[in-house]
Image 1 (tube, rainbow, N blue to C red):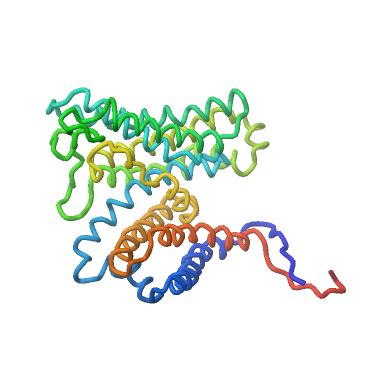
Image 2: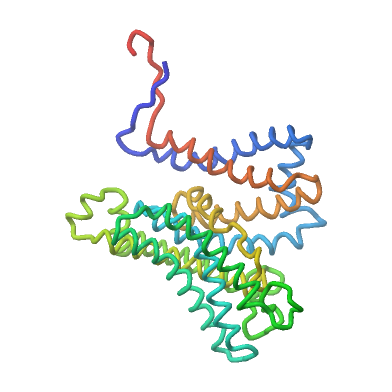
Length: 361
């Protein structure tokens, strides 16, 4: 008989091993899925993980895209991880990402066609403020009425998507766009365009902000009293209350930081790679960042590596669809397997397997 026995403390060995094991299991099971779809599994895995970096025909384009895709994932995941460490589950980062983009774009378009050097910083501030304000809704409802932040933040995603559709087809629509939905193209407006800082690298202000967020989150969680309070609230809520930590303050701090960073990610995306507010601007980064946060073990530097890995699956998945004809849904399922297997292998971090004879059982 097999029995799971709780460990006295989490296993450091399994903590380090489970992400690697999860990636390996994802490749194996994903390979079987691709085989069932009639595609060569080894070639599909190679196309996803190897060709974007080393294929002579595609690598020159794909390598810069790695940072473009990883930037918003890392930025959002850093914010989410702080809340997750405190047991505050913000599942609505996608809505905060959208509202940050809409808020920042609206402020910029209000000053069109200004070429002021202050305009882009103002849009950055507005984007962070928009994401923060959207995250404050579940924060206020949780602290004032005891609502569940998971449900509230998730439902607000659909509200944000409808606001996005309204903005694209209505009050932010390009008046020179011949009636088509979508705002003005920020790529044609040099004062607010989030261009590459180093040509050919994919490094723009969003990627720089993600790197800064990684360092700031590490300093906060490892060296600052607020990071200690966050960790204490997540690991021992009763002890946190006795030590004077305000649960409401932790809720506002965690949701505020995650919302602000998600809003920044949206602003940098809409002024850079996306180029405009459009109906299909929401790309699922807010949901994928949840996988990135857990794959990175809620550690800032782990999230940095996990964000690059997940970005690789985005780029490799698009390449596999182009080269092998794989359906887009199979790539999304492949990405979802990462979280599934990570959660499955995480069981062994807190539990050990015991084999018992039937008599003893």
